[in-house]
Length: 368
Image (cartoon, rainbow, N blue to C red; front, side):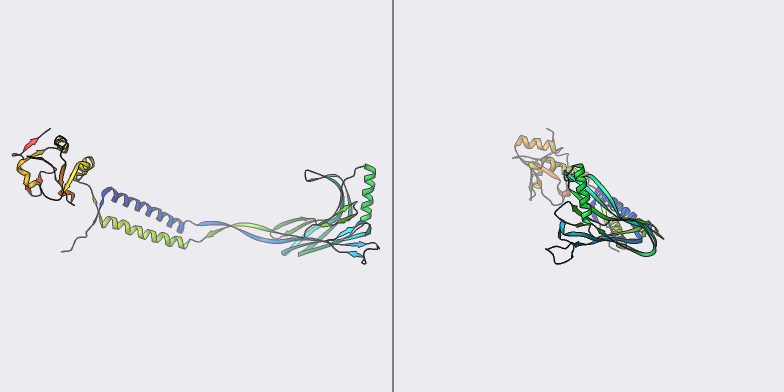
């Protein structure tokens, strides 16, 4: 004869709750696994179709008049220059367009000088007046290549601009700081196989006018990258790590569900246990547990009480504790009694006391 599987006893409500929760989590993991495998994920990816770079820079050299200070005819960049010693300034403006493949490149450039009088209000330059002089007129260019290079040199006669400023000041009677801005304005359009490209850039130098000495400021060398881009939707492959994780979780949960069904059984508290727990809950502070059996010796002078509340009232009348025989098994805790000098008052939770029949015909019921 095969031995029966010994099942773990669990409270019925707890067992059902565990099974339901496990099944719900199982369903969630199943859905996540299905979604990961069957529902494609799409990610937007930006793809560069055509890349290009605009680069500009300036170079200059200050040419000197004969003088007693310098032994050279010119000075390089980044120095202070005495106005009376300066003959003219040679400035070169450089521009370079570079693409990653051939394109139809068209555009124009011009070089101009702008004399501008200004004032400063709240840390902001406010223009009072300005005058534009064209040093190199608009010049168009065209190329079918992936690169275009421009370099334009101009001669800046500093004394002419200072004389112009002196005349305006004498005429207008307005004395303000004046600045000479010389720039090359470049406008480019490139027609590529992936679309058009527009670029505008203006390398420049700035020179203070009507000053005894000055420092030339030049625009920084610029390298501006650009591109024609396209956004594509790319389908992502299923995440293998997530799939393995979901599958392992499903396997464990399936085993848990079968384990709860096969190896556990529901246990509900009997009316006897419920009533016993109620007695301990309501009157636990008045109960005294005994390890020895006193009931057999006092059974002849025993008065049976019909409920625990009556036994409590007897205990209050006599000023005696309520005793019971202690047992690790709740089902063996059957009798609660009070020992008086002459009588024993007993409340029997069951009619039969561990194999000892109690005849109610010879017992006197006490109802208080």
